[in-house]
Image 1: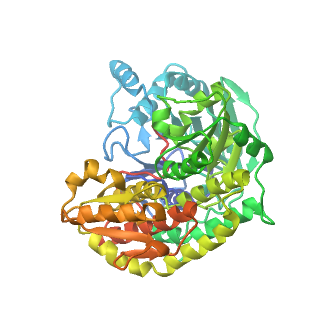
Image 2: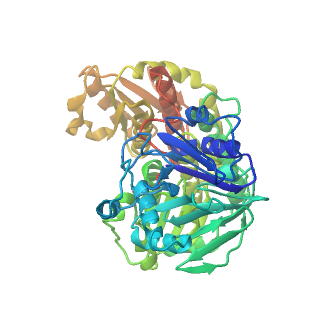
Image 3: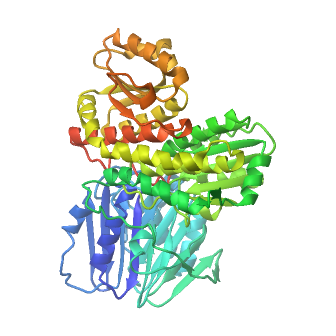
Amino acid sequence: MCGIVGAIGSLDFRSYLLNGLHKLEYRGYDSCGVYISNGKNHGLYKSIGTVDSLESKVPLNLSFNPHVGIAHTRWATHGGVTLSNCHPVYSSDHRIMLVHNGVIENFESIRNFLIEKGISFSGNTDSEVIANLLSFILSIDNSMTKAIERMMQELNGSYALAIIDTYDTNKLYFAKNLSPLLIGKGEGANYLASDQIPMADITHEFIDLKDGQYGYMSKDDIHLFQNGEEISFEFVSRSSENLDVSLNGYEHYMLKEIEETPSCIERLIKNYIFRKKYTFDKKLLRVIERSTEIIFLACGTSYHASLVAVDILRARGKIANAYIASEFAYHPVIMTDNPLFIIISQSGETADIIKCLPFITDNAYHLLTITNNRYSSLARKAEYYLNLYSGVEVSVASTKVYQSELVLLLMLFDAIYMDLNLIESLNKELLVLKDIINRKEEIKPIAKELANYEHCFILGRGLDYDSALEAALKIKEVTYIHASAVQAGELKHGPIALVSQDFPSLAFISEEKTAHQMRNGFQEVKARGGKVFVISSKSLAEENDSFVVLDSTIYLAPMAKVMVAQYLTYFITLEKGFNVDKPRNLAKSVTVE
């Protein structure tokens, strides 16, 4: 969600900034822009839509040599998708140029104050409020670092800022609170970005800015401040392993990432199993065993993965619950006095989860964080941390990361209970997944038919309902078909009123004990004109099922069913002609509440 790229010094700014924006496209955006300057000359280029469209506006051969530049991809929060709201944004006096990730909660009161002071606005963003506030403070005290400190005292909310003072373009300023921002060390230049990826090919030495920190860089120096005092810092070496964002011959990232699932599982096996024994921190395992309650906090796809873990724990007598983080942050629920919190976030920057952290830390509860980014905000604040090792996931719709989350949770609890026979089962599951990949063409006809509908139910019972929730999310977010997950036994308690020849159902069957009841329910749907597309496990399959997967160990069954749903989503979206990797209105990394 939004991306920042910036630099100062001697480099090819056009290439660095635009390539950096391309590498941040996976985060989701609806407009983008670039500002470059050498003090005497400058260029400001903006575009509604893609970085490709912006690239066509930035001259291949610039008429001047810039020494400072900032760039941004914007996902609209405050203000519509217009050029005036697109970043970079100027202050009204054109002194301050900045890009901003985050949300300023008190922007309206600051905006009204500034309007009373005679300051005008060209757009509707909270980001322009920041620019004008900083310029206003500078009119009183011309020290930039002091003005930034004062500005930060006035702002409530989240922000990562890259700031250029057009009166002194030999410095690139920055500030950070509750939104990620990295400083990269270079030779003859220094860099910043909201993500490591734009800088991965240039440097491996970084400063992970902490909340409340601000400062400036020149081509040779970096100065860091907090609470009005300059502070020391250390560069941290970061590996660029698993940061590849190339398509590697695939037409779309979503397809590539679905088919990377087996390699992701193999990577988890390599990192957490040695000689058929788990290598998890023994202290963490003891904490899990001794905790009287396990509380999962997550959003979207990660929440759906946690539901399977809840089922596993409850079946073994452990109190376990999963909560949507945005709800828990304001309505926390704890049933015992010694809980362990497990927070799951693909990006490690999810604002809704970060909002929950004070409740956990203020009460000194144990915390395990699971993310796909070991350098993220949530990972750095964790008591215990587990990496998903999935590599970069570019497509907005999560695929391989869901599967990695599911497997890692299963591995963790198998290390305690040792009754899932998971190590052997995972090798078998890899064959199940590879079989689906090899037979994906068989899914196309189902997708082609489903593409004709505007609504559908996704039916399941037990773990299949957990899979149905994830399948419904995938179908909604990428195909724009209204998909609703329903516990199959509840269909007749209300939802069946929607069933008609225009309202089909997709159903999962993985468990023998509910297979008969599932199929009885299908008769009720068919009697009302509704069509049912059945995805079943081989031992429970019947002749007219739409797609049959090889049998899985029951707790791994969601992997196969969800992979089929991912392929269905992909092929439906192609059939409908929509953007597979960048569905409308969505962002990959949700860094605002």
